[in-house]
Length: 191
Image (tube, rainbow, N blue to C red):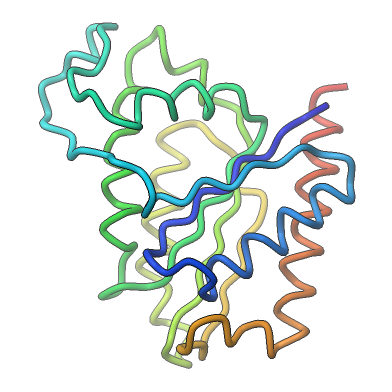
């Protein structure tokens, strides 16, 4: 059975990012895919120091939760990155997490990520769609560099209060439906 890994970059549990990711993963489960949700706010992920040990195929000298996450990322068939817009970019939690993807730069580790399917979930307070554009570009460039396929995006403007997106059934349905599609894509890619 295939697996989708959801990565929540919001520091607010039970907030809008959490609600959308949870609904997306429920859709993936309905499509017959195993899922796991990782809340970065509950993990210890140290900043990348740029030492390039991982580029030489050596283990990361940072002894933190990211070392376990590398294994879980490699075992997943698809990744869903969820973060609200903070100052036109990702949260510090998500940015620190993505910075540590430098691990996948070396020839030994690139096959662990290349070819995987990805999606992004981006809720935010403002109602102007252009507000999310820099963050979406950030993910598009990162995924392109990692040789991953961006198979879906869910951009949800106008949600501020914790969990208020649950009052928007059309956005929750979009999240669920995206999860179903990702679940089917993950299953179809590996038949």
